[in-house]
Length: 186
Image 1 (spheres, rainbow, N blue to C red):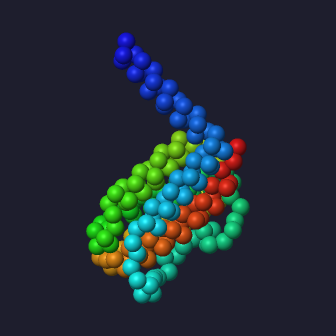
Image 2 (tube, helix red, strand yellow):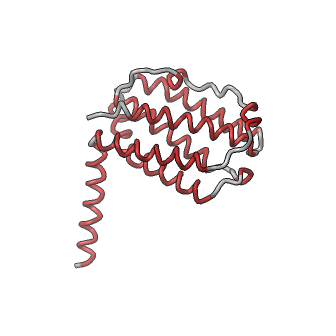
């Protein structure tokens, strides 16, 4: 009897998660709240002195991220999902030289994972329909941008200054992600 109730609860949870992710207004609200939490967590991590920012380089941020542009809801979701995946991947790298709190990083990774988990069913549905336009052109540019960030970290051997530069880039990414959530509407 207990197993039957448990199975019903699990099924209900699975279906409600999928149904809730289809409510774009709710999704937009949840994504914004989570992004605010990510910004707060990333801001809690100590950064090093200003001289580290002089070591910045051009990571070839896609033009679409630098200037206002109109996005279709589907394109915004594809770009958001792609960005979150890359940010998650970067933050799982060796940050031991930074003095960053592992607890804060873990909380940040949980928030990012939660966001990706909410977007994934919709992202998969969009990819199956193959009706994206803007997202298709931005995603390869994003890949190159994040590849450049990782290469920078590796070339600097994940030192504290390199992480400070990347931290600033990720904060910029969160601002762009926040703007993208505005396109996620019913």
